[in-house]
Amino acid sequence: MTSASATFSFSRITGSRRRDHRSPSLAVNRPADRPRRVREEVDNCWHYYDEKERCIFCDIIRQERDTGERVIGENEHFITLAPYAPRFPFEMWLLPKVHGSSYENNQSSVYASLARMLKDTLMRLDQVLDRRRLTS
Ligand SMILES: [Zn+2]
Image 1: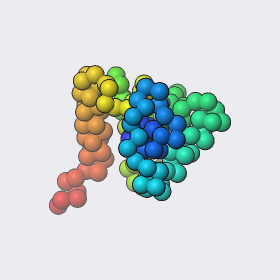
Image 2: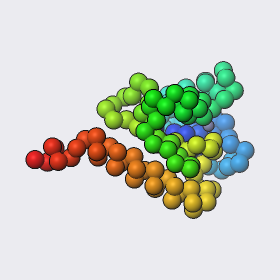
Image 3: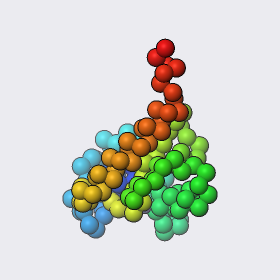
Image 4: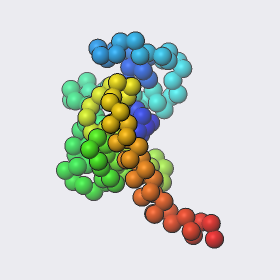
């Protein structure tokens, strides 16, 4: 998630450099199995946490909600942002508004909320791209 996915399970991605106390058995990938870019992104998140003792994604959400400049959409559980310094055109981050370490323990209402936010985000992208121009 990365964009949308990097926020949900550091311990799963990192191979448990630091295990989440709530989900100690989630380490599925050895560090060598991780793509370099994912490893760097996760390491940067940990550096941020070491320095500020806060989650970088929670800070990003707080800052973007304050300014509102890059907020694409928002519902009860999720927010979609256009990241500062995107890596590619139309990059968007769909992030959970409540900090957590995994998806699998959420209630079904959260998944429904995620589906609605994803649909809303893709419909906005469709409007921006104006598919009629691309197909005619
Ligand atoms: Zn967080």
